[in-house]
Image (cartoon, rainbow, N blue to C red; front, side, top):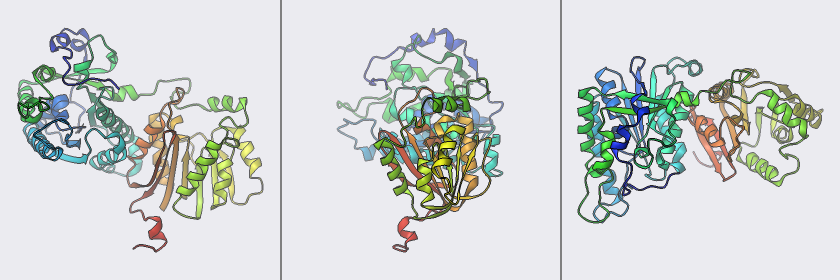
Length: 474
């Protein structure tokens, strides 16, 4: 993450005015826009980054939602005159006034998450966006067919240098991938710390030219964020966060967006998809019987014990294990479930798994390439362990929809993924869980987060706790 302060001199607007890639950027028009969702990490992000777009969409009669994740209460941490509680109230009022000025018909949503700490509230942010997106209009299956065609999700640029902006962009990207919406990302602080010859994704830059009316409305709305563009007082610590030199970046007659949907599009390979192909796993298992050390590593034994302990019931009827590998965890599941359907993409680990559980009643194995192939039936437990990040975004959204469709009423979906980066994998473990958080109708009932892995349990709403199942509480 970039280290910078609003007190730094920053890059002057004159430097950006001469950048040829800004002038030559592909123009963004609203012809295919049917619904606009603006995500802001803090009050004023929506005006700074997308105020002109917000105004322009509203004038065309396009439905608009604005989701503000935090109240921006930490904007002046050293203020001697304003507590965080007071700043929270002030900034909510300011963003309400600014959005009403830009888009009188817009629906404004407040998540109320802690300013400066959105990363630790990633799940709540994802659920807030899912609530704004709402359920698909004609059945959950339509999500994988582009049911949100015409919807744009516009959020802070993930490379903007601010951790809250990165989180907001991550959540928006996951929501767009799940729903089929278009993703556009707006820079804010990058105009301050970066330079025109910096590492900008030039092929993804889109320029939205503001009409005179939209331009005027944006400038007026920005002025309504008084706590940010003006000093709170003459005391040290009360300086403007968006002083004139910074505000100049947003007084332009255009807005710049990064086309996040184009960035997320999988690069075509021989199979036409960025998901890892079966050949990757065939080669991986050719080198070793147990390349991940399921049989030998304490790390894996401990993780399996935690996974089993996270299950909210002592026994299940039918279980589905997606990505069973050599069947070590399959054996544990067989002790807790009446039947287990275990699936993997590669035949070599399946042969080892079949040998391991030979003669075990109720256990079946199948080689499938997910999500295109899928086992029939409905399951009380679905285990998604260390498999989601092998899929490209589009395949993962279909994968999770198939999980949801295969989950019995009152069923349990357990997901566990490695959190460290692996260059070969299309997605990170955290990104997989971000996308899972946007699945309609599921609520997280267990979360175990370590630096190495993330373990979660999800159940259809309304979910009952273990104590409720046991009759210990109503």
